[in-house]
Image (tube, one colour):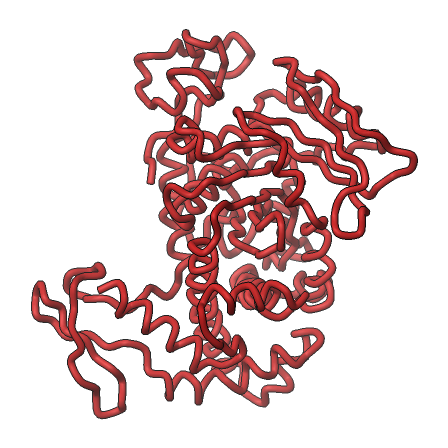
Length: 461
């Protein structure tokens, strides 16, 4: 992953993603500290590298609470061979490098502990009553919930990677949302900013990152704004595009998004960072998750720092023409509607409207190519996945219930909900995942999940 994030973020510029600061002119010409690129003339706000690197390290720990079994002494996956079983029946491997012996996951033990809880969660319309129905005291319940979420989060990652590898090309969509949880401070809730990436065609939930730095560590880029930017009041999509450009340009700093008030920005569990910090973290993690050298279209919410952080993270495949970036707007189809295009924005970009697309022709879509990619990616936009997931979540994990949960517990429920959304909700996603595995797989079986993890660990040694 990258560790330096200041540099040009303009497509086609020879300095794109070059972190050598001697190439740029530092200036406050626009009213805030920025670096101006001498090649293309673009200004990029100065970023705090240490804050982003700190948040990346934090996000890696929270996104992957359970790692694939590996040699503990070498602290990485190494060539290993099978080495019998423990008395409890757990398979073991021996590292060929240092000779240390380590264990894989115990399928029987984990199934005994976690299968009843997973069954209960799957069969419950809402998880709100699961704690009571489980018949466990709070300590044991939350221990098992944490263990289940860690197991499922790793399995979800492996399933998605297998699916990605089976596809000739990827079409992904990134968008933001807000999440309210308990803050632990009087009556106020905590509002976090979330960035989601999903599969644009089938809606697989791939990665969600929020902006809470958990724990007592301080950040040099905290969220300090005390206002909420207004929502677009109209319905015309081209007017929405121009309105967004104007809103971004009117900020005291292009990447300074005001999304919540300070009374909802404090928590006993950690500190909120600026959304731009979370965005750079998100796309670094996404780049690490996706297969290399895979043609990819990435359709982005119209936000300057989302574009900047994505093109910086994917700069090499963008330069090679393997990854193309777009701005995307979606809305419910309106009648009458006709294909249109219009030049809008600071750089006179071409925006194209595609009316009445999707499986049920219920979407109007506006796209702007930010690289050299064609607009054929519009054919992959079959549904408004942000709304679909939000509707699912409101049933499985209602907002009213989320506001009673700590951030930590809510994230565990969200991790499990994302797995269930990918494997159970809607039907087609689960079938596609099974097909990519070249065999039968029971997504509600802890035994199958553990076997997938152990087999993957063995295959990578």
